[in-house]
Length: 113
Length: 115
Image (cartoon, rainbow over all chains, first blue to last red; front, side):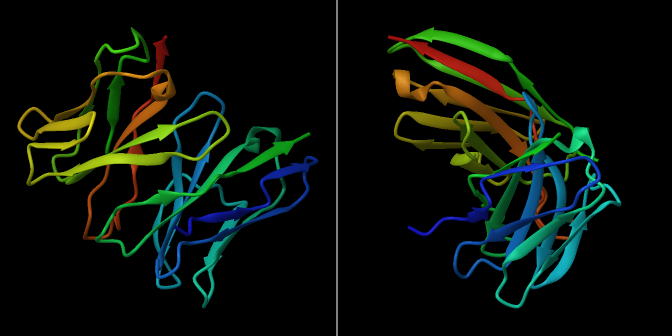
């Protein structure tokens, strides 16, 4: 079965650089969530989209922005990167926000040096 | 906002034994409680979930129970196998309204099953 696809899988950036993470949800899923997971930590909710509109916002820094496109894929844009942004970034998708069964991608490991 | 507490943080069992992980939540409006298994370097994998209108759900060797009054839910794994070794996360969410299903996770339990 098709799963959530994230790219790239690994990314190394220097401080103050910009990074763009991409997420392709499971086909027919119109809801996308972004989570950040630090080493040894639980995933923390960043932001979500439903039908290309932002539906909820969590602890996402102002330096980060995201959007969902017409084909339902989503991109997380991260600017002025800091060492503390090093983490695993997961995207999850669900059939709709009421369905709530969220399926996660394999994640993007971002390392800021 | 929602707060989810998970215990224990580590759990070590012998193959064939049972394992139980417990979580409590704070928001009485939460109505969906999934459990995820995360292996090293991989994304969380949904293994079982329960909704607030159900008290117990079972799928082969795993089961989840929910006590809405006490606001706690538990994961039970029977006949554990070495491949069950992973980090397990509980989570809670509130479908509907403005929450749109965002998950609040527990701190995770590192389960080790010794052959």
